[in-house]
Image 1 (cartoon, rainbow, N blue to C red):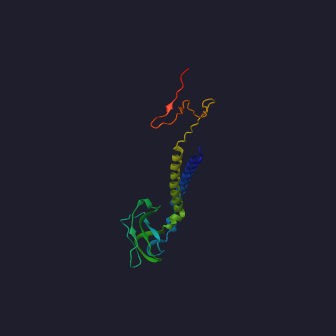
Image 2 (tube, rainbow, N blue to C red):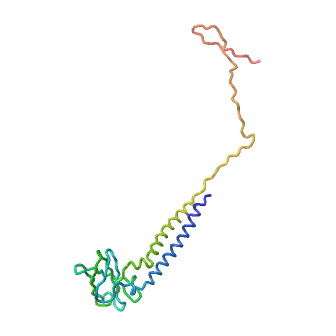
Image 3 (cartoon, rainbow, N blue to C red):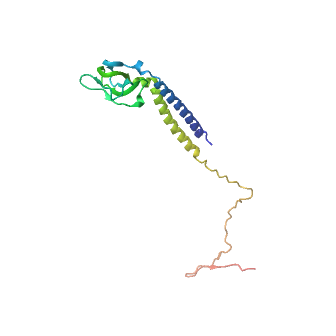
Length: 203
């Protein structure tokens, strides 16, 4: 039996375990991020430098709720702040209250009634996000490999039928020429008469 299904199954299981390790390490690294030290902006009023197509998370001191906090981040023409309060994204000492994205390099004005942080989301990717994404992709590939390995192993091996010939079971018959024992007697041909057959008499 081919070893390919076994190799595929074992390798896929090994990669699956590796993917779990990568995801776990990635989440651990993300959880250890100190958003306060990584913040682009910290305070109540001021300016923040942003990059084109950048995405940013905004936090407020966890002494305050989303309802108690008002934030405005503008370039005097457009409001970039979008309020999104989700406890899942809270950090130690800081409450997630919103996000923003920028469409050009520049400086934005910041106004808030409580101290806030503005953090570039790229820090999450560089500190562990890539490991989480890579582990997730490897996990999907491993699961596909496991399915393929199981399918290959479940296939039945084709049955081989062996024909055993014993001596004397088959005989070769030689075709002998056939010679008729009765032949028509040659008589003078007469119009309208059929040939006369001369059969031998039994002794």
